[in-house]
Length: 80
Figure 1 (tube, helix red, strand yellow):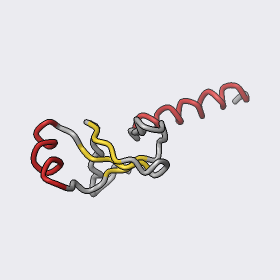
Figure 2 (spheres, one colour; figure 1 turned 45 degrees about the vertical axis):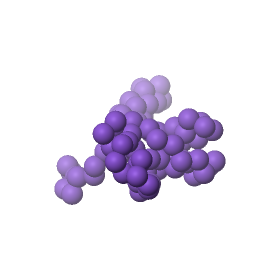
Figure 3 (tube, rainbow, N blue to C red; figure 1 turned 180 degrees about the vertical axis):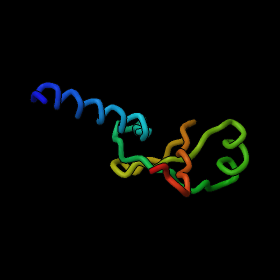
Figure 4 (tube, rainbow, N blue to C red; figure 1 turned 90 degrees about the horizontal axis):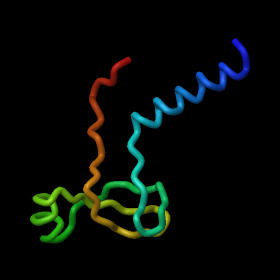
C-alpha cells in the first residue's frame, strides 16, 4: 500500500468517525466544548420543550444557550 493510499484510507476513517458524532458549536464564542444541562425555570421546563429547544452550556465562555439540537441517546448495547 502506497503512502498516498494509506492517507486516503485514514482520511476516510476520520470522515466516518465525524459523521457518528454530532458536534455542537457555541453561538456566542464559536467553541465546540458545549454540553447539555438540566432545564431550569418555568420557561425552560414548560414552553421550550413544546418548541423543541434544549439548554446547552459552553465550557469556554460559560454561556447557557437554547438550541434545537439534542444529544443522541447512547444505546445500551453498541454494535461491535
